[in-house]
Length: 303
Image (cartoon, rainbow, N blue to C red; front, side, top):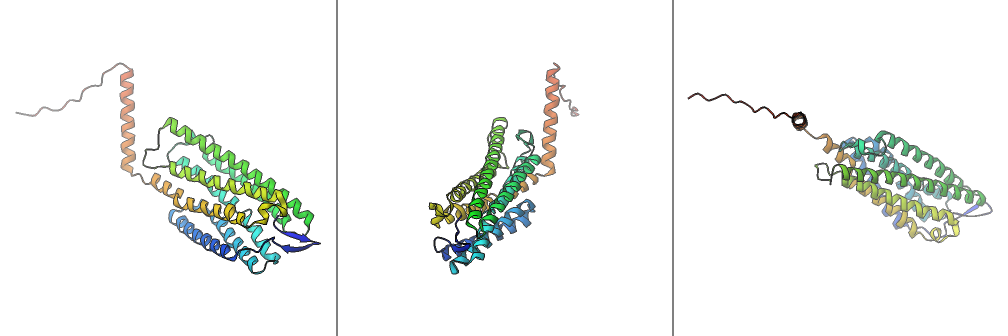
């Protein structure tokens, strides 16, 4: 953990937190939150509520870090930061999991998914809940004044982070499997939906969270005397910045755009496609039976 204790008394972080960096990320996180709120109500993508919870947690968490820059030995400020920032990406992961099922449904390719989309979301979110409970327990132990309990809490946090990495590995494997099946059965993404960019954005966001969790796991495995815990740059470079990249990517390639495109087909387009399919099937049956299609007869014009 980043905290240090001596006879039950918290001594503060091993460095003086940078106030300017905290303010910058409070502002950017706040703006990103407003952008996602607007998109959620505009597109009615209510499955982005977990992402908004994550944004609020990160914003108030880095306010705790700004508070620490003004009062470096304030234990309440440290609890606010650590308790909100460390488990926050779990809520972001929940939105990513639910977004994949929408991306699979948009091109009507449910059969190409390795797992039924509805079940996929439930399974990954269940794993997400387990990760959250484990990490929350570890963080709670880490903010106690006892050095022994802090070290035990750090190990619990590492277990939660490793489990979340494994869940993300399964998620990425499922997404890549769907992508390969779609490319081999349907062909390149040349249709009007252009769903591939949305899938790539989810994989990019997932990769950022995995990198963040790896660095955080190493930090807690090293305890308070490790190189990561002793340098503040790791907090902003491998946590705050990566999480900001995730929300920007999710905002630029919002799955709601894909849903609106897939639902925006007119009834005439659907009817025309159905008619073409029916005519093609009838012609195929006629050819297989060995009959030639009867030529159309037109009334003769009178002289």
